[in-house]
Amino acid sequence: MLLDDILKVFEENKNNIAYRNEKYEVSYSTLYKYVCNLYNYLNAINLEKKIAKIIVYGNKDVTMITSFLACSFAGITYIPVDSSISKERLNNIIKLSNADLIISTIDEEICNVNNIDVISFSVLKNIIKKTENIQLIPLMKEDDVYYIIFTSGTTGVPKGVEVTYKNLNSFIYWFVDIIKHKYDNVLNQAPFSFDLSVADIYYSLSVGSTLVTYGSSIYEGLYKYFIYLKNSHINMIVCTPTFIELLLCDKYFNNENFSDLKILFFCGEVLRNDIVKKIYERFRNIRIINSYGPTECTVAVTSIELNKNIITKDIPIGKEKTNTNIHIVDKENNILKDGQVGEILIVGDSVAKDYINFNSNNFIDFCGRHGYLTGDIGYKLDNEIYYVSRKDEQIKYKGYRIELKDIEKNLYNLKYINKAIVKANKDKYGKVVNINAYIVLNDKNIIKKDIEKRLLDVLPKYMIPKIFILDEIPINKNGKSFIL
Ligand code: AMP
Image 1 (tube, rainbow, N blue to C red):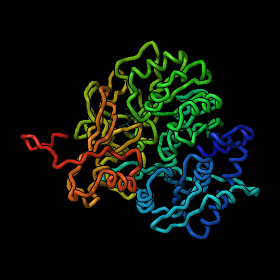
Image 2: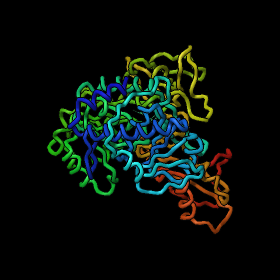
Image 3: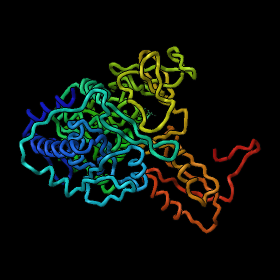
């Protein structure tokens, strides 16, 4: 099991670097000490008052990884929450998850309406620095919920996906297997509150590599970021295609400057063939793996290693992973034939337990096995699976998963909004380039800035649409809005 293997990695890699960011690095022996201390602390409070779930709040600090591991070894579910999230969204997560405690890994006061206990960063730092001799014993069981990741929901509040220890084990052993080699320096792109980060965090921890993170925004300066990557001798990047597109915008991102870079693992969005061609032009011998999967099915459930001699127009998402099956089904969940387009249904060990405190028809029983109807449309051909589109209003914008209804519901929560339509604009490749909100107001004194400010209290920054205030929503002869 994963936690037993991580223990071995701690033992065998004491002097290796486990974690690096632009300010400092931490060895495996130090990380081990941090984890042991926090684990000990959590076990002690667990004896007095049972702790089932802990929110780990922060932004990619090593103490976030420390907290994930300490919780897991102590048999406690962790809920990663990025500190860029709005206060109201954090409070929604506290309420929805029934969390017992928050561990804060940043120097910032957290105001939570539920008044749940908080281990502040200064207290946390004191806890992990102790030098007691503690033995880590994994208390997590196969069917226990290992982590809960919150994602955009159509109801206007986020929904939490409960991923079990079994789900995670199934994912990570398959992932290590398809990566094949040990890559020493692994770049993390996704915030730790997104499930893509599970791949790079647990790959590094289970093979003894260095997880290289970057706390600041790369938008603050691409050149600074490049120098950091170069000096970190990055061998592997786990990221969305949007991220690599951004790096490719700069000629500096090439084989000469990044001769250590050996593999790119993509997930989360359509990987276009023009991006793949560009990568091969710059990096002749690089390995590229495309994969697909929703948070509800533990990071990724398909993979294909690309080949520069065969770059098809539509790049497949590949074949299903071990112990997981993918079916293309019609509206009655009948399995369709090869070439027929239908909904992607995922069945087997990767399918998460459920959403926490949220009823959904997407988790189903399929012939006695646990399944998840993804809402993604696709088909199978020559043993490969292809993604086509979504059947609903869920989009990917800058790599983030967003329900347009989530934005719309939060607009309607503002009393002065009479009508709101939220629309994603796409480029010729079908990629979302911006999100627009068309609004009719009850109160003519309200200006765009008021709406934006209010939305920022409830939504993450990447979900804030461009606002257009209209007198009325234009309607065509059939009574449908022109905007839609
Ligand atoms: P998330 O839960 O944030 O990982 O987003 C999951 C959704 O991202 C899926 O349901 C798909 O709509 C989309 N997605 C993930 N991987 C791919 C891919 N390789 N190609 C196209 N869409 C993808």
